[in-house]
Image 1 (cartoon, protein in one colour):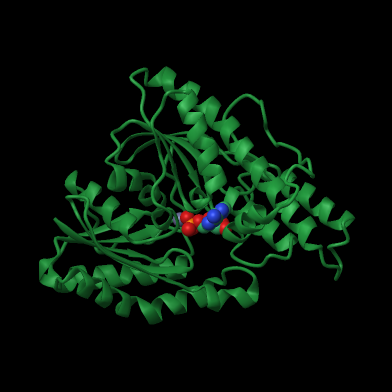
Image 2 (cartoon, protein in one colour):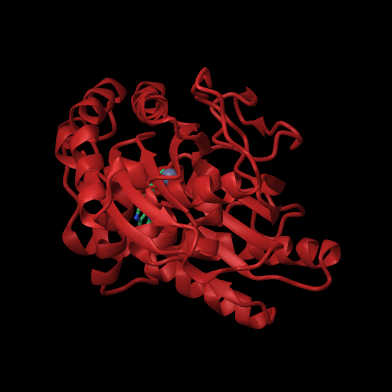
Length: 361
Ligand code: KG4
Ligand code: ZN
C-alpha cells in the first residue's frame, strides 16, 4: 500500500509518501520560519496563504522523489485537525481534490494521532504503550491501547510545554522558534546550576502538568537581571537561565511520567514501551532524562529520530495507513476540526482562568 500524506496544520507545509511496509519513500517539509519570524510567532493568515502557495509543488516533489505517479497511490491522507483552521482547510481540500480526481480513498488524520503513532512507523512499537506527547500546542500523557484507542492519564492545566519553551525564549531575547534556541543556549551555559526555578506539580498526585508558574519565575529573574524594559541580558545570564529552565522542565516531565508509569503498569501488567513524541521530543536533555527513567522502570524507551518529532507528513501518511488498514476512511464532505481531542472521554481540565479557558489539552 502506498499513501500520500499531507500536513498543513501549523507553520510547516509537508508532503510524504509512505508504504505499509514502514518505508518512507519521500518526506519533504517546507518550514515557513522566515515568514513568521518578524512577528515572533505563527500568524495564522500568513500560514494559510503560504500553505496554499507551496503545497502543490511539495506534493509534486514528494511524488517525484518517490518515483511514483498519482496512479500508484492507494489512498490520500491529510491532517484534518486540530490546528490552525485556514491551513487545515488547504491541506484537506487538496487531499479531497486528488482523491476525487483519482477515485482514491481519503483519510482525515488527527495530527496528534500522527505524532502518537510515529513510533510504530520508526520502531514498530507494539500496543499498548505509554506516550508522552509534548508539542507546541499539547502536553499529555496517554495510554495508547490501539489505533484510535487513547486513554488520557494527564494533561497540562495551563501552557503546553513547547509553548513554555517558546515564551521563555522570547523572555530571554532568543527569538523564535524557542525550543531549539533554548536548547542551544543551555548547551553554552557555564554555570547551569546557578538559578533555582520552582518545579510546578512536582510530587503532586495525578499526572497533570503546569508550566505557567515556571515561565513567571523566569520572567522575574530576567527582570532582576535587568533584561526587561529595553535592557539586555548578558550572554552568561541568558545561557544559565536557559539551562535552569530546560533542566526544570526535564525533571517535571520525568516526575509526571514516573507517576503515569505506575498507573500504566496497573492497567497493563504485561508492560509496554515509554514513547515520547511531538516537537519537544527533539530536545536531547529531555530525551536523555526520559531514557534514564524508562531504564529505571525496565521499560523500552522509544524516541523517533529528530526530524520525525517535529511536524512532518510522513507521520500523517502512516496514521492514514494504520486507519485505512482497519477499514476506515472519510467521506469527501469531512469538515476540518480546529479542536479534536484524542481521548474524547477525558474529563475537562480546570484551567487557572476557569473551566477549559486557554487550556492546551
Ligand atoms: O510538534 P511540533 O513541531 O508542532 C506542534 O504540533 O506544536 O512542536 C513544535 C514545538 C515548538 O513549541 C518548539 O519550540 C518545540 O516544539 N521544540 C522544541 C525543540 N524543537 C522543537 N522544544 C525544546 N527543544 C527542542 N529542541
Ligand atoms: Zn505537531
